[in-house]
Image (cartoon, rainbow, N blue to C red):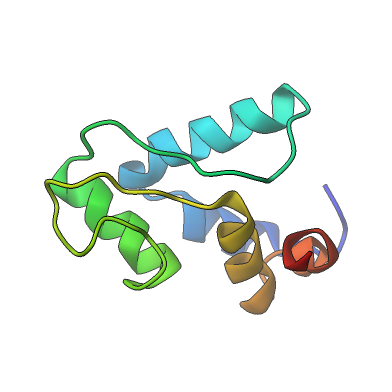
Length: 98
């Protein structure tokens, strides 16, 4: 982990149990060496999961049109950019902006 990552804040930010599937999907992507491109689409997110994702990314950044019954799309680059902008993981900035 990069020394400029604020690990306690990162844990607080992503440690919400409602974000467990999102964190697991991101970890899997990293383990497989896949880039932060495309989108993640959690199947049938529960209300608390949907709320946590939208709170993390901002209601306008998680797709789904504002309806809990529709699909939610999570662009990993937007998540990384959000973490960089909040100074939680600033080293994400160059990879996330391009």
